[in-house]
Length: 535
Image (cartoon, rainbow, N blue to C red; front, side, top):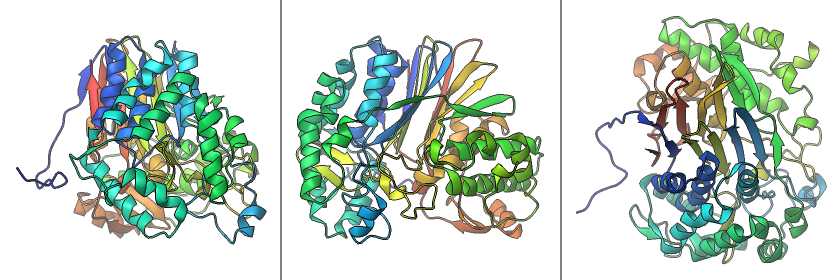
């Protein structure tokens, strides 16, 4: 039977998913299945998150890989814990070195934008601190998927084709192994076509046997180092050997009686907290849907321009996190929001193609986890024979020495990927996240307001048509965004652009836990191959 796996002429609807013994929500069904398999073997929410994350490097390589960065927020034993597993710039990566190579800006693709990957180290760190099962067991589902192969899902196929087109335009010998690994037939695999990666399986097995150290030391590190030296890259094995992820205290703001938590800078979760903080100080929303949307867009814009101006490594920021979230500053920024769209400018508080997954177990433990290669497959760099595709996170650095996010050896750049978490009265409500580059803080604002202001269940909140501020007064909206709302926003001065595709509007997952019954309620993303599995 012939059919198009990416053509859906009729709208479909899915229900919120309920369970009690455990839940895993990811952007790809086989990734969710890997996490559920570990839960049913006696693992906890952290074990399940690691298994799902490792599997997603195989079944959704279009968004993440073994060379990704990662962040996590973990609710364990009645307390929140944050993990920043973003990697720094190599020691050889100076502004002078980059400009000497003829670049006025760090390139998007190739060996130069690659920073130290943090994802394999994040899996090991989470397992060591909170895991129940042996680390090697957690990677077994991913190894089997890479070794035996799996049928490619529709949205993964779409992103794979887009990556093939992008890399085909670049005449860079360093990108050749990407084509050998991910397009051996000269094209992206089609929906339903089986794809396997023996090199990926071998690397995962080495990571499993050494609790991640094989990636940062020994033969794998030597292969990465040799490839980068051959192609004029700046990442060396000394950078890999020195890497350790950082445990951090999550930051929060109060919104509608709940505490919304994010990872502190260099992550960009602060943008979402600022926007929600402004909306909180504007009071309860009325019943006018246009005014409601207008407020949410304007608050997000004001938070974003602050983020783009100030966010980088916490120690290198001008204003502090505390100043950017201060009551008087957020009230001042909220006061800028009127009836017409702003061309937003950053304030001055000192004067006063990523995967996201959520897991939960029957004991009340929950994980919000995100990992990313940044732009789809990332840099386009694949270390031959290993399946290691490396992110291009260094593209976010500035080569202007006066910029807060200026490139420096050992510095971590402004990071778009952000896991979120909700608590109420000191108890876990649940993990949430919306991946998708610069969409992510905007997605967080939209999902949180949908659940806490519009009182939608997690699935309905993820189903809502989305908007995305891009610059100035320009706001992109999804194809199915209601015309009457788009027209009303345009009358308020917003430059509304209706897009033909939904893929750039983020892909999210949510799991909420009822504090009285312990019942879990989950939603998964309709814009991708998402799945939420329960037990």
